[in-house]
Length: 207
Image 1: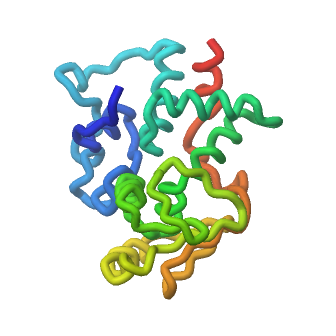
Image 2: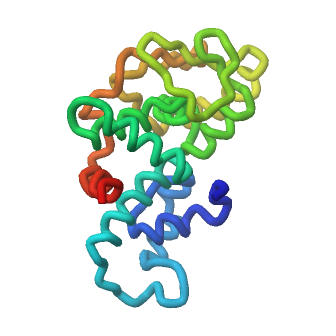
């Protein structure tokens, strides 16, 4: 199955919560969740009682859509997290946080993960001095991500505007003057998304 290319606001309505997929629009009155908070479709206004399976499926879909990951890729992340000692859900969130597109977004170099993914895929970033255009590339402590010299003039204003609206987590250091990001450590547990019940996702894949 290919990547979803339809209206992103529809995904938020489907999950019944803001996934913050469209940057500034999600914080404005134009956000679809403010205007039509019910699910999309002909029967969206009608309430349905969710089964246990549906509750777990929706939680999985929510996390997958937040990070913009395809199903087969997400399943591999879950399988990798299951091999890590400790809580599988925490390990899964850390894996997703370490994606290069997410790091660019978290550092405030893009207004959304979709924009960060596009910037990475277009080859605007270097990782440890080498052009890296793979959004799913996993960063490690000590890595340095920076905008390549040919792209700095083009992206400086975009990054400046995006950075004003985002605080940087403790495991990253942002250098706006040189358009550089330093990975200090692995994501700490307090930096992970608390709105996701990862236990439901682990249960979904363990059935």
